[in-house]
Image (cartoon, rainbow, N blue to C red; front, side, top):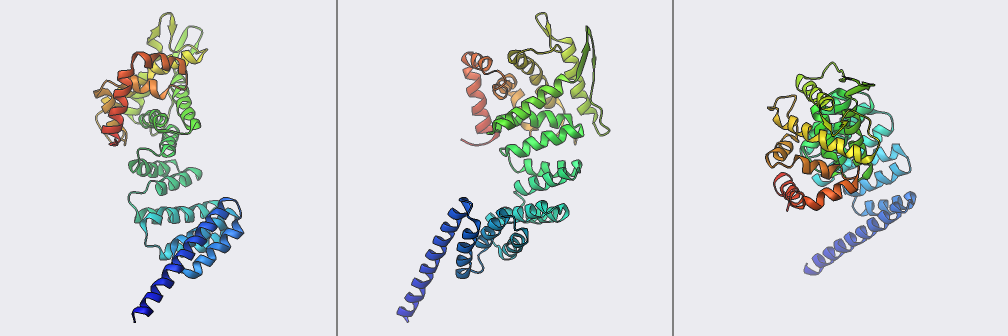
Length: 344
């Protein structure tokens, strides 16, 4: 009996080794763009483990990459049916929703994202995907609801925060626009996302005032759903531009250099931070970043934060500032990492 048991165990170990080897080969072929060859390897592995959800997911992925949506959907549905590993949940339902999205079936895509999110309350990718689908079909309020779920579950997914400020801008939710647009450059690794956020902050704020010759007036954006708090933010920033000046130059005047753009942002954004932090939390003012901005004000780090997020606008100005404010620079990152992000 012992010999039989050992033989069965050895056979199982060899089968697992073969399956792992086939999966490794399949992944290599997939990464090289040889999708048919990858699928062949995965299907050999599937014969060894027909109830392995990961294998079926990989087959679906390769079919998706060769744009065979019918087969890709068939395998991802099979993966979802047998999957018991929460770690695979987002990948499986994310793939299913993506297939439906690419097949121009947004309603089916949203069903897939919702179902996957119901299994994993900590997911940020599935709510994010759902928000992108809602935005694509021009349902911005619904997109905002799902983006809130995404950013509630992550402090570091840059695209979720970027989409949050973009949708907030379109809806006229100015507190959220400034909150997420200022935060995005802090966590963004992609330079284009940093540029998009800073450009939006600069252009939106600059557009609040229109001048002709020496006559200036506010041009506040009008949206039906803009709250009193949101209106108060843009109104205050608009009047700040008109009333404040640096030397003989007014902040509402046209900027002709990156140094002037940097100067403008360094002047305006700390005021936006204080406005956001000073509001008492209401349904219009409380977001996942409220504590972040309150923490900046409490620790007197508003200007430090703005220099850091705007450094790509005019790096020489940032570098000069950092030389004389290294303690503030270190203090910000210590606070952000240890207290806000709670990482060491």
